Length: 80
Image 1 (spheres, rainbow, N blue to C red):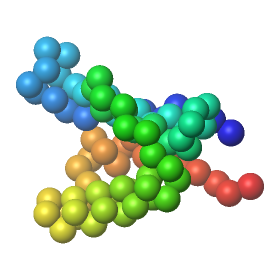
Image 2: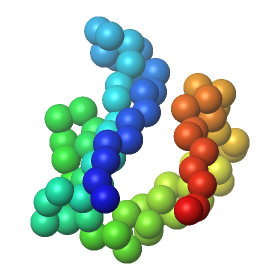
Image 3: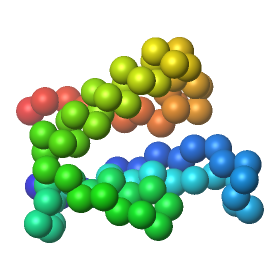
């Protein structure tokens, strides 16, 4: 299974005022590709999960709960 998942963040330093982060799954040598601006980082599944945990821990510890713009973009998933 493969897909693209994106979120936008405020970026006042950019002309558009926003920045897109995209995660691509499947269709390549790696299970996950994390794309920020023009940079793409390939990862194995375990590395992607580790990044998820590390980011969650760091952001909550340093900055508190997610801002409203971030929580509005969360897409609920169901296991089938």
